[in-house]
Image (tube, rainbow, N blue to C red; front, side, top):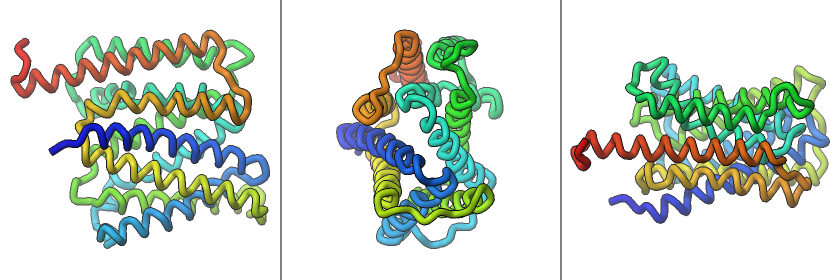
Length: 295
């Protein structure tokens, strides 16, 4: 039996926790190198998720953890974190998060392109409209378009790749085991990046606190996503993922005084509208496939 209200609450919690994690990492980035920030929150998340996996008896080794989809998922997730935190260090967190809202559309188009999944012209059109919204947020050709804007796009593409790879991982691989492995590898990659770009710095108690909070929030967000996936229908919780953008705009305003400009607001509205349309269309197609709705 699905508990959609629990899933919706977990989805809202996941969005708030993930954005909080990124915001705390951004603060720590003022005094620490990017690699060390990624490593710090990765180690904290690894310890928390590892403990959760051990408690739920999901921490034992699984051979399919080395399968191509699992490995691709882990490194796409790590790459997305690197790109996104680097992006929000120099651009408004609300704008960067708005770009991420096109991920479901991009994932659908990737599935059609690389796996031959059937995607009708309406969802292709929704993807094109969503892309137009992203361009309004990025504003290429203006002073607001920088290399950091491209990093936000790179983060979005990595997240879409992560989601697509996740759908190809065998169901027998425990979710918390994947999360623990991802956090562990994030720590390893982060330390390697820090060592190769100037060395590892001794964080102050202040910065260590931000890294600790970022890792805790990241773990909480991941666990909330697991709860949502296990307890609710995807079509019921999917629209509530857009509340992540609301959290990002609120945090950006109160922490750094960031407010999206007029064109960014229009782009955000277009991206969300295109995504909601695509969700509604997919839900209808699923009902048609089950014979609940007549064509």
